[in-house]
Image (cartoon, rainbow, N blue to C red; front, side, top):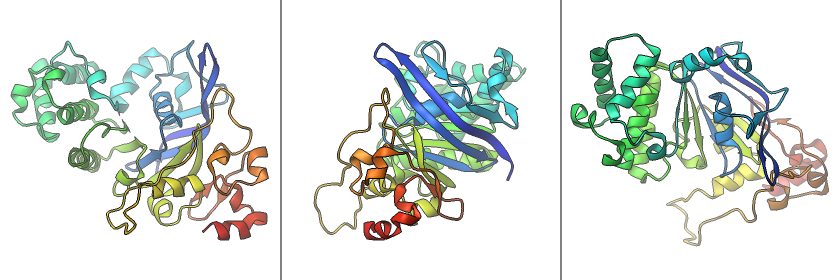
Length: 334
């Protein structure tokens, strides 16, 4: 498959009064045509910052993409894009669905205007044609009485409908790349399933590549082709959806899977949670970032960051338990 997006050694920092927050620390991955890549991790691990970097939304002087970071779209160096190229890329080539639709939508503009604006900016078509396409998009995303809803303001719609409007805006110009940044946040499970089914259906129809960002491994099981597990600004494990769910390796990935509630759990005890807190990214640890919370932590985990160990079939993990000298420990962990 052709590579649509290439991210290499991405480092992103935010400069604050307290110091430099190293939000993303050496993240690398590819996105291929038509695939769905899920980026999973708890809050503060750098998922959304990675997405904003891809969309060119890291702004100086507060935010900074470090020298040596590489972002390529269809082989082109995105860091060399000028303002005109970014304007064409955002909305035309790539779109993003933000997690808080009420905050992302303009409260002073009608829904129809917000959809047609994206269309007219990237395609020189008449207003009537843009309105017809916007109405058709609202039908596609499952909003009833689309013609009437075109004249509604965001606050007049429910949370689920606002998220559907965000999807309509994102797909308005048939982008090649869609970033969905926790699109089901604050929605009930029924609406979550509908939103994910809708994204998957539109993706297949338009052959769009999707980066799905979430903290919940449970919602990506039936939609993701490949999964990246992020922790403390780093990718700690990556592989196909099947490898991550059926053959997880990193203790953090296993902990995330344990935290998914199961109806078949006979214990009926309290839900599992990961003890401790993520490290402070103003002064990140020199070793494995998960060491302080890992029940299998060794001395080397604190002293040095693990390399990416190859687990086969494109599956890699950054964990010292995979080192040949620690194989017997790894078997005991199971």
